[in-house]
Every structure is written in structure tokens, then in C-alpha cells.
Image (cartoon, rainbow over all chains, first blue to last red; front, side):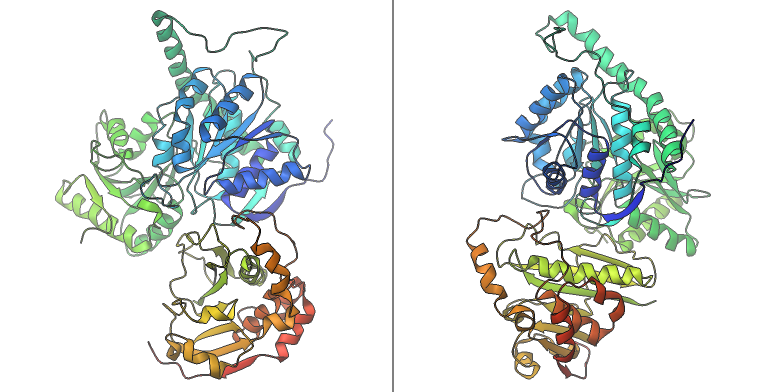
Length: 402
Length: 215
């Protein structure tokens, strides 16, 4: 019989970085591996304090670079540990070699990303290019738009990635500054709720001298395709698990997220923004003001980009006349000569019977805030396209045009 | 709708916590009073370096703050200089609408200091408070030892002290709250560690009233 105990749930005012550290603590991670780079560093500083204070019993390993950091994460996960790591900007890039080996050996390592613009030049600001450039490496990936969602995404990502039907690493992303350094109220759950939601991790084939197994040996070319196919299938199969886990999360913690897309004021909308991450907070205010003025505009926020919810994106975006993709990433020389989100949104819509016009906006680049009047400007471009029945050009650089 | 911005200019590492204490305590008080309030550090100034200028921001509104993600205060109504010599060299008055307040930690009078203030015609009041003296006249000497330490940054670092406003921040908070009424005295007073300096400052402010004109 269940006993009624006092809930240890509490609300604290913290930023996204600290929310991620708290999530790692609640997930009772075994190994943390760190190498400093802004802005994600604050997460590792918070975790170092937790370990030093005895609040969290975990190995805390400071690596000599991000490449070593991810190598340590890979090794620790192979021994059966629940691993937490993270990085930002060029740090994410320096570890690139490890992303495919970690997903290929099916190690559910979790990596927190607080986005930072890639060099040159050194810029603290947030652009999603750092994590997005690794999007095809077999890691589950999605963006939070505030500190609470970041906290929740970390717990859900562990649960999804560690599911025996999935066994894939996860990048849990948040915008540098806009989420990582803005404080807001975050509800920290009762540890009992987390225990119920996220049981202790057990990898099916850990490295163990008592039960020897081989990980990552050299193989012959004909052995490659089946392994690649399995990894691709794991990505596909994760979709059902992602939906299950979001349902269970809602039942236990009371916060329900659509696993794939958040729709905001899309009822009766003709034109919508399609975007990821923290700028959605300002987009919602802009949309409310424009709705007050009678403009039929809405927001579709992508919450998970790997696996890409192709069918869902097609179904949702097909309802509108014009879709404005806000990139916040660099896709130099890409299909739209803008960012990388445009191409996938268009591909998802290709089989639709009712394709909207799609236009891409380069906004929030270099870590600039996307302010209300820029959302108004982009909406105007979309409504002009709607009237004209075609787009003026595929990509607009916001702030560089009349 | 009432919306107010406060910007604190301070010096990296040696006076960084003092700057943060000012915006954090005022922000916490405003939220207790039911306002929408936000406190944050200037992201671009960080990681801070010893003595380099760093900015801390506070915003308060009766309504939801829609520019929550804008990383600088563009129109500060109140500006605080945590260290007196900062009065020269930076355009801390930029964007201030007419009718603003400038609070300086200095032993000089406002009549003396105003000559160094760029765009002083926007001010409704210039407030000088000898915070270093009121809090602990030796406070900086205690810190001199730290200048020799290779402390890379205070961003995310463990605080030396969890106490809010144990030294020069206390008189500065008293000066801001008393001259602007941005939060209620009784809300913020219980949070302040150095109550003696806080109380003393309330009686020892040097306030120069001005007639602001548009810049």
C-alpha cells in the first residue's frame, strides 16, 4: 500500500545552466566529464560544487580537451555508467570524432549543449550551428525554450536513450544566454517521482572482466551495413518510445509537452513561424500583439529534430499558407543559401497535397536577440508572400534588408 | 504600465559580487511585492577580469517583461556606480530617459562629481554615498590580496559568502531604494546582511536634485 509522504517538490529561481546541473543530480549520474567553455561551463561548475558538497555521489573527471571529454564519456558508458557531459560552440566541434563511435556502440551518453556561435571570430552569442552540425551522427537531439523545459528534457532524454529499444546518446540543447543565463522559476521534483520515472541505468552488455565482451572491434566491410541499418532502425524505433516517455512524464510530473512540435496560436493562422529554442519566448509575445491587430500568425516550435518528426511536421505545416523558418544557424551554400532547417522542412512537405510557401529567415545570428519588431518584419514578409502567391526570395537576412 | 530599468556598473572580480547583490536583492524584493522582475549579468562583459567594468541589470514591470531575452538594458532609469572612479571613462548614461537617478559610491559630494557625468542634464537626482566608509573603510585592503590571485572569473564560481550585501552593496542598496522607491524598504531590509551600514546610509546620503531636460 502506498504511504503518503510529504512531497519534497520545490520551486527555485535558477538559470538554464543550473537547471541542467540539477537535472543531472536528480538523474543520479555516475560519471561527469567536463572541459570548460562558455556558456555551458556554469553547468559543470554547479555540478562540481554538488560533488564537493557531497550532494551528489559521482566521479567528476576534468578532461584535457573536449575530444578527451567525450572519449572518457564513451569509456565510462561502456562500463555501464550513467554519464553526463556537455559543451558549447567550438568545443562541440572538437569532440566531433567521438559522436559516431558513441552512437555506433549504442552508448546512451547524455550531452548538454548550451549553444555558442562557431569561430571566427570568438563570439559568446548563441547560434544552433554547433550542435546542428552533428545532427546526422545518431544522437537524439532537441531544443528547450526555457530552464524548466531544459530540466525536464534532460530527465526524459535519459529515459528515452537508455530504453533497450533505443540505446542511443542524446544531445539536450538550450540556447546560450537566452536559456542558459536567464533565470526563471523551475519546479524541482520530489526525488521519489524521479526514481519512479527514471530507474537506475543498466546497460545490457557492459565491459566487465567477469563477463568479457568486445566493443568496437575492427570489422570487414560486409559487417558494416547491418550495423548501420540497426543504428538507423534504433533512431526510427525511438519515435514510439519518445511518445511513451512524454506521456509518462506528464502523468508523473504534471507537465505535458508535445514530443515533436509546440503549436502556439495556430488556430486559423495563415502564416506561421517554424523555429527551435529560446527565441520562441519572444515570438509568443510578438504573435499575441499581432493577433490583437488581426494578423493571422502563429508559431510551430520544433522540440525534437532527431529523430525528425517528418510526418508530424508535414501534417502540421500543411495547414498554413506560408511558413517562415527562423534558422538561428548557418548552412553556408545550402539549398536556401541560409540555414539548415529550411531544407528538412521543405523535404517533409514535399509529399503534402497542400504545400505552403516556405521562406527562410536568418535571425538571431551571432547571439543577437530577435526583438519584437523583427518578428513583425518577418510576419510582413510572410503576409506579402501570401498575397503574391509566391515568395520573393528563399532566404532573408533579418536586419540587412528594408 | 510602469517599466523601470536599473543598471549597475562595477569592477570585475574584486567588486563583482557587490554588483550582483544589488540587482539580485532588488529583483527578489520586487517579485515578493508581486511585480514582474528580472536580474541578470551582462553576458558579453563576462567572464569578468580583475577591475574591468562589468554591468548587472535589473528590470521591473507591472506586466510580463517581453524583452526578457534582450541582453542589455537599453534605457536605464537608474544607474549605480559601485566604484567612484568609474564616473569617468564609460558612457554609463547612454539611453537614460530624462528624469533618471545616478548613484555613486564616493566620498565626494554630488556638486563635485557632476562635472564628470556625461549627459547629466537627463538626471533628476545625483546621489553620492560613501559606501566604502559606511560598510568598512578597510574593505578594499582586505581584497588587495585577491588581486594577486589568478582568479579567472567569478562567473559560475562558488561565492566566498552566501550573505547578501555584507559590505559596500548594503549602503548602495539603501541609496537606491530610499531615493527611487523602486521597492519598499521593509521588503528589502530583511535580506541585507550588513544592516548597520544599510541603516547608516539611509541618513548619510548626499542628494543633489536636478531639473532634467531631454538629452
